Image (cartoon, rainbow, N blue to C red):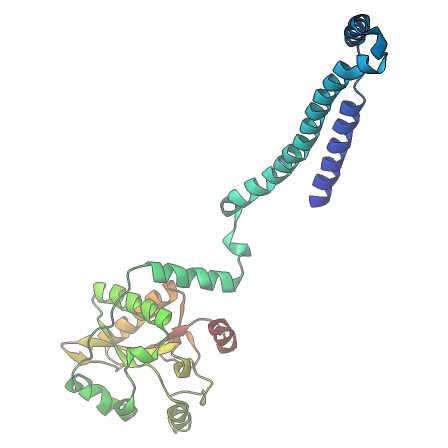
Length: 275
């Protein structure tokens, strides 16, 4: 495209310059110049022929200035015409884009940008310890769970909070059961006899603030039992809303983790984007 524009510009410049510099002298111009020269010669015969050409030189000088002005104007016009398709293409590029051809990293960046432009949600206040009594009795490991929202990825927190808001509107209020998880705690959970997790320290998105475990609240108590029909309905609703928000739900795994949601994508890719 640039090569074509350059060739067109050179051609226009050469063509115009050639025409302007080789402009034919008409009979009317010749007669006018001859008459002027004869008149000057009659007034001052001693001066001779050279002085008779002064008016002609002035006329030719004005014409030369006009010619060079036109020649100088030609590149500007050519460059403007060459730049016009580029400007139009950049202006209308958004109208012809297809989401099928947008790389995943650009889609991810657009989602973060949209999240930042939306109203920033504030995490709910922590529940009192007695709210977790039944849950801890069912799963003692939760007694040492970290529920600090500040240790999680900020953009991911906003997505989780919006999911929780939609669930509460559906009648399923949720609370953070566990967020950040240290590598040591991850190794301890992976080494338990009961399969809580298969990921070891550094292999889980919990270590990077990109995963959370949520649980529904009923009558001020955290309910984690999957045998409870209402709690199971809440977990299924969590899966629907999390998937709609572009997150991964643990209920879709072969090893079911119904309260778990995390940022989609491989851990390696997510860490590369953060850097």
